[in-house]
Length: 250
Picture 1 (spheres, rainbow, N blue to C red):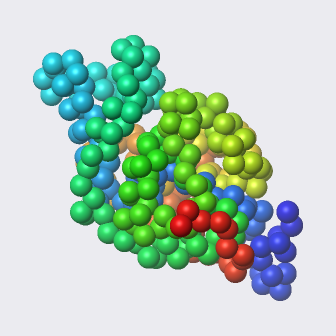
Picture 2 (cartoon, rainbow, N blue to C red):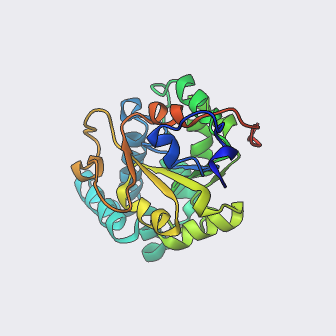
């Protein structure tokens, strides 16, 4: 794709616009990417997972938390560990983990406008469930801007950062990675997208998130991290331009 397909030839491109001039597939993670930690969405999910393990194994809170993080580190998600080692029903786990209160999650029309202005297709790729993604994106007021959601169920419960998950996503949605950009809050989840040819953007919190590990909030400088921002809407705004609307989930 040449730059004239997305920007008028008479308009000089800003550096960030030039870097994304070829992109017409915009892929977003959900949790801690499309909303800030002040909404206290992910901490609730995290606590529900701890409670699930405590009730399943009869553990105290500290022991349950330690087991949860062990599975997360070893398998990529706690759910994957529970399925592999204990045959836990994934639907039961996901339903339990995502029973949360979204009261503090407010609509974000600025982000919605920025996403709507991006040319081409917009998709969500999440290790969570479709229902959770629909609830969160719906509360943010941005759900209608996305063509589809690829969740952990469609991934066969194989989580990011496994290469197979990205390959399955690309195949299902006929996405050319050379024309795609991936937005993520976890640095290691950008390794495969970069290797596949995507532009990558790491989302970091504006202020320290007390509910996440410090290493998860660092503005990583690495070859597979092409851009870093603490302001997703502000980052996207200069990339938007007039273009035919993509199909939506409405």
